[in-house]
Amino acid sequence: MSAVLAVVKTADLTLCRRWQLAAESSGATGFLLTDPASKPAIASVITRWQITPIPAPAGATFEEPCWAIDLVYCRGGHPRQWTATWREGRLVPFSALVARPVPRPAQQAGLATAKRLAV
Image (cartoon, rainbow, N blue to C red; front, side, top):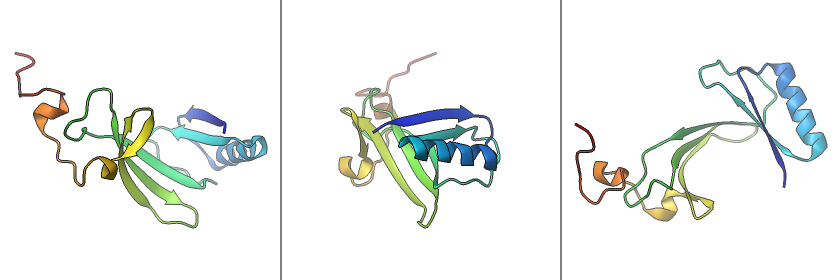
């Protein structure tokens, strides 16, 4: 499977349609990233996602980044939300780690006990 990633400030209908056609003709999945501050254009997208970093659940380490993943728009589908972490080379949903993650300040920093890190 191949994918192509493009980062642009804004995306109008023409750019989105050309991107979609190029991805379809090559057989690759196309990811078009836009500035989150820009207004989303009406576009020929199949899905629109918003991914936000979040605090790690209890027991996670610095090597395990965590995200809130929102499927904002899906043509012919319904919006959904997930929380996941990157563990051992794959995306793991929080539901597979714990039923309801409750982050604790000392554990978010990977510390066994709360310590003052700066004066």
